[in-house]
Image (cartoon, rainbow, N blue to C red; front, side, top):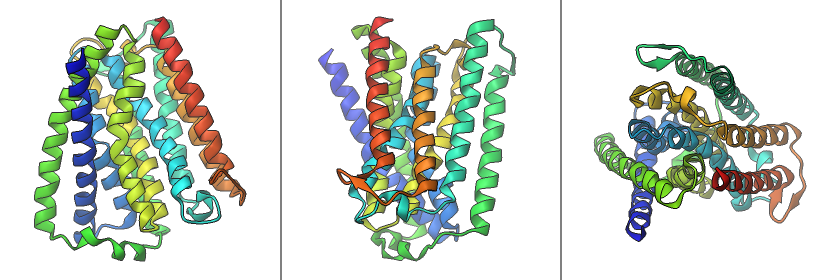
Length: 337
């Protein structure tokens, strides 16, 4: 048992290190090729830091553990939103984080909620009606989900091209001096390490769930999700240090959108049935927690309160409370099953 936990922690460490370099090299590639901050924050870096989730969820589905795969996607979303609260604490300003963010993040956050709602409805329909339909081995709901994801990215990038954020702050980042060739090689090596670590992380997580008797949904939503979301945390903290707050928020919210598309890839690798038809109703708890946390952030972004308590805005405090209560509820339900 101890050996499995050691392997889990080692693989998590590899994901943290490789995920950090992956996002940095991805930033360099985007910068050298002339892509804008919208692509860097919401698209390229978000997808780069979400690669651990893709590999881990796909491997979990292939191993016949769809609940770890789905739990990883939803759990990563809630942990990512918690990152915004952490960023608020590190925010070098007397005002809350939302005071320094552009309103355009509302659109990204809203798309994340919409994608989560599609998955929630799909799970409810599958569990209460036992009805599922697929095309070429992939659930129709997963196909709708990936189509909505591409529509979301198209509209978000088009919107941000028309409403560009200030990009001057990025000139202060030292690693942007790396050449495109070195960045491409580094990106590839980091991706390979993440693929390996993600596969081993999924295998060890499945063993942990089996040996401890804790439900796969809890293991995927908490343990695996936290481990695979650490690159987003490191990237967000790095962005805060250079006062690139919009890039940090864009990365987190962009990752949440991409995380929902991961379910589609998990469905491809699931060898028997359709992933959302096999998903536990317990995921509705994690999904609801994520939707509530995202809604709180959007309200805070609109309201832009100037008050802080314990170094955070009221919205960040609310996000922390909801996450901790959800963590406790999910643990109790997971142990009881």
